[in-house]
Length: 123
Image 1 (tube, rainbow, N blue to C red):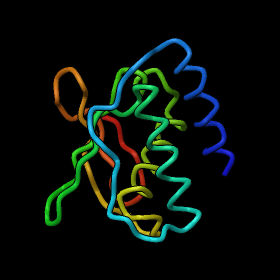
Image 2 (cartoon, helix red, strand yellow):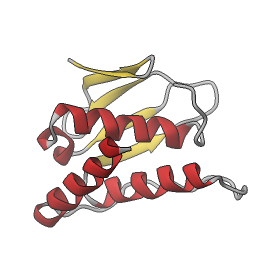
Image 3 (cartoon, rainbow, N blue to C red):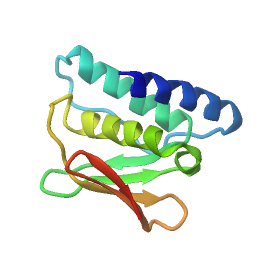
């Protein structure tokens, strides 16, 4: 939980220097959410506002598309790990499992890292 609190603090600091607008919606079907799901959604929404996250899409049967913004690259590794774990939580609606996905750079759309088996590996 301290990693998540640290992430929120860092995102707040980064957000005071970097502006950004979300590029896609985080809307999911209207379903009763658990407290953990609501927390993950709120953190993903904040990451969008702070330009840590640029795009997040996932269609059934496909690998999620996660495009990170410039603020992501300014974060220390352990905070990046916490952020990507939050994205995983959001994608899986709070389930305690993991989905593998690449992290794409906002400018080049090239893979700069990967979330695999619950761990972040930067390229």
